[in-house]
Amino acid sequence: MPILDIRHADKVWDPLAGCTRKSAACRHCYAELLTSEAAKAGEEWAQGFAEAGAWTGKVDLRPERLLLPLEWEEPARILVNALSDLFHESLDNATIDKIFAVMALAPRHTFQVLTKRPKTMQPYIKDPATPARIEAAMAELSQDAPKIGAWPLPNVWLGVTAENQKEADRRIPLLLETPAALRFAAAEPLLEKIDLKSGVWLKEGGGGLDWVLAGGETGSEAQKCQPDWARAVRDQCAANGTAFFWTQWGEHVPAQESASPVGQTLDGVTHEAYPVNRS
Image (cartoon, rainbow, N blue to C red):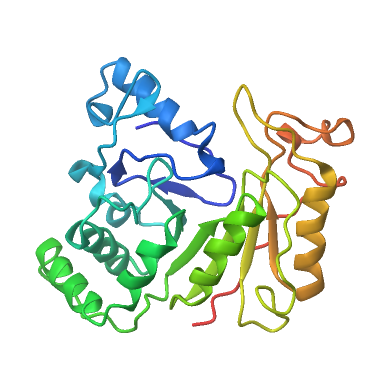
C-alpha cells in the first residue's frame, strides 16, 4: 500500500481496502485514484477494489495489514483507514470488531478514526454487545488478551468529515451523540464557509468537539479554498478554546502563504494543535 504523508498523524494504518463515494468531499478522492493505480500496476492489495479510476464497490479486510500496530513499539498517533472507511455500510460487525480489537491491544497508540458514515458508527459504538464482541476478537488475536477496561476505548478518537455546511449539520450532531474518548471534525476538503455553532458544537471547557482539522482540496480539478473560510474555522475554534490544526491549502495556495512548506500556514502562522484526552 502507498505510504501517505498525513501531517496530523505519525503513521497511517490501512487494514481495509476499497470504498465508495459518499458526498462532495469524495469528488476528487485520492484513495480511489491511488487504489486504481495500484490495481493497474498489479499490486495484490488493490486487486478488485478499484478499476479504471473508479471504486468497484468492494470493501474488505486486508489480513496482512491487520496486526501492524502491534509491531510498532514507539507510541504513535495513527490515522485509521486513510484509503477506506471503517464504518462503511457494507462491512459487518465482525470485521469492524477485529480492527477495534487491535486498537484495544495497542493502548500505547492513539488511533484517529475518521468517517463519513456516523449513522453506521453510532449504533456500533452504542450497542451494549460491542465490547464483548471485541474482547472475543482480541482473544482470537492474542493468547494474553486482557479484558476491555473502559468503553469507549480511551485511545480511540472518533471524527467525521465536515466539508460543507450540509454535511456538518448532518454528521456532527450524530458524532456528538456517540460515546467517544475524544471527538473531532475534519473540514477537509474545506469547500465553503462553515458555522461550527459556538456553544453547541464548540464549547469552552468541553462537551462538544475536542479538535477541528481543516485544509484545502487536492486533485487536478480541486476547488479553491478561500482564506476567509479557513479563518472562520480558526477563529471559531480560538473563541471556544478548541484545538485547531491547519493541514494545507491543497492545489491553490494563496500568494501570501506560498513561502511556507507546501502552503501549510494560515496568515503566516502554523496551526498544529492537538487536543488533550479527557480520560
